Length: 191
Image (cartoon, rainbow, N blue to C red; front, side, top):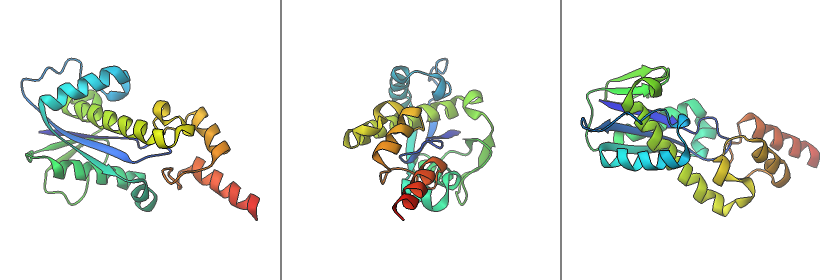
């Protein structure tokens, strides 16, 4: 069985990441839980441990794809990509949430709050979150004004203030309401 989860749905900037994980049956799962409930430092440590003791893959949907097909479909696309990249095909994949990816040749079952119930989904959330966090930290080096090394692209008060001050980058999700409102207001101001 595989567990699949995505991270970054609620962000204002950056892609959405998903991971698919098949845990080794001897792995210790006591500390593996929903990535949102673990500190950054602990997530990094657990991610390394899970990767060493699992079959895993990461899938990504870009900002362009998010803007084109919406965040729900982009999240499902990133999950589909993660599942397709697994080196071993599971007989069943537990997907965190209400929806499952379409057009995939693996039996899938949606599990609401799966990252709290199924260790492989929690493991997937840890791997996906760690991968996305490091992606945003690296992207933040090119765009240091937005604080992505700390807010990882989420809509914190600081990030919103920086958007107002410095404007929108190509890495921002232009159809998300706060970004759309800023772009709309700037367009009206120039008319």
